[in-house]
Image (cartoon, rainbow, N blue to C red):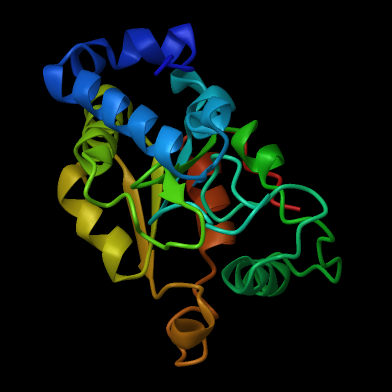
Length: 223
């Protein structure tokens, strides 16, 4: 499979993508796309990286795997293409965002490209999925790669905010140096978790911007 990854990320991750397991992963992913309909489109698998270059990364949000409905996933976690119905988890993200940022404007699109272009790496742990089969590519070695991405960002950069939503994402904290970065944890924004009081009120968006300003970085325009 052609590696549709920017030159900056190829350099930043050169030791990782040169390893045998990564080459085998690319072959395995290509085979999955040949035998079944998979998402996101092959050319968009690495969109999270290509919209947000290594030098620009200020925030990392970790999701589990892409949406598995037709036309939804486009390579950014929690994000969907324009003109696609806003998924329940993202709707709850927006609800928290509005209260946290004291806004009444509810976004009409679930496309989060504008976050990515400001330095938010919207990273799914697994970067591909078969149509209508959630977590169907978890057997591939995507997580070996994305865990390494998190570690390398932690090692090579400083003052990055890592937003770990839900138990799955929180397991990634072990790859992050808390002395150099800010880790914010809460429940997952999915309706099940959010309705149990584990999501709303976390104020992660304002806390992120406060930290960015304290470390002389420009805040994210979330809305």
